[in-house]
Image (tube, rainbow, N blue to C red; front, side, top):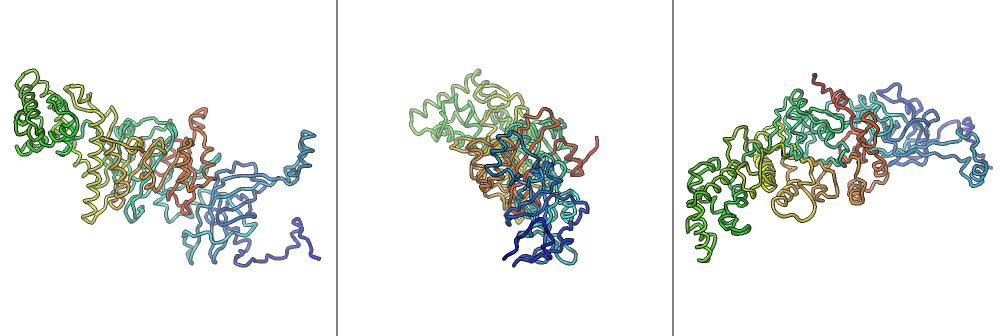
Length: 625
């Protein structure tokens, strides 16, 4: 008769019997955790466990702790090497066989009370394994490994500490950057290491270009996180940042007027200047000089000059703009000279010339009518002064003699040279009492079409600079940031300048990686962005609020259908629901190669630093008063 096994009589087990294919460690070796001599015990590995997830029976003394989100390490041996499986607690469950049956539950409901039963409770933690490390060779060098087997039942599990992580990752400590702590009720006890790498090879480099995204509802802290990410990228020598700033927030920071977003007053421009030696420049939109005849044709094609002369929008006006640009170039009038009296006289002579009108209109009736209208306007003093005022306001866009101006080409060349941070202020703060072309005002000409043309020109100049550098055997090291990215790369059919900008960005997201030109898209929405742009992103930070039908479906695709990870994400508290800043947290799900703890592809969960002081101290970036 087979003797039954009594789990309370461990003396019945005289020795461990190794299972086929499983290497059993000696107890003292199995339980030894390097770099942290006082590692806090958490539990023991239990069945059923697998190479994807471990089940851990929680020790009695740890049951009352807030454990969800905590990081856990399980040491074991694999292929003769000391190995450490590191994972995050996704879920805690409790079982109690004493009260699991129908009879027991009927007694409880009848009596209305529970007899003392805590000793019978079994708490189980489900670990999502995100990284495995091995100590290899005589020097026990830490190397990434794979989960090729399952630690034996009873293997100890420890709560991960900063000491353990710092020891384990000591060879890479110069590359590590900290954006916050581990997610969870007590997660702020553990700094979560992340990679914010540049695009070249060598120290701190990824050896490849990658695109990133930061997403979250308004108030989720995405702008603050973006500034921390930019600081991490800027710390590398030879890197540059080019930021498109629709709301003016990043520009204010570089100008010494750091904005107080979500209670987080962070002068990241000052840090980049003092700690990393970056040259920073906030460029108002009004200070940009357009520097191509193609853009002149686009701008003049929208001006009242042609409207008053009777050229309707469309093919005829485009043809007239193209012909006017050609005639001016043939007269050796440069873009910067368009605002001179000589240039204006030349424009009047060109549009009043029969040859010019015939090249636009082929029929005699149309030629005669437009020719007469043009000559009447230029001969009448009042009409002539109105046209001159409009013309000179428009030509300011091309005049590099204005105080504080910089050309698009010069700006892009400077950024390509490295160690520069340029923020183009696209907000109203970046304009100079600008008015619409159609209003007929005499001031600088600014409307959405013109702003879109300037953005398109900047993007196209960046793309061409990257391509030229690549063809010359080099690579850029530039991260381009698009705040409010849903304005630049929306889904759907688009026409006009907005469509040109979107199409250029879609193409660039596919082609510019080989140029060393990466893109960071910051947006309130994920589902409304162009799917091809999303598909090119390699690293994502997803903050609170993307829980609607379309948003959650898009997020599920990016997370590879990981239902457990999405369940954790959906439990993120709304930062605005906190009673005060002291209790407010900005949590993120991280997807992609953003951490040395994420090389298995599992999503990680981060609580961003609650204050700039905590962020600066964790990364050694204090700059003094």
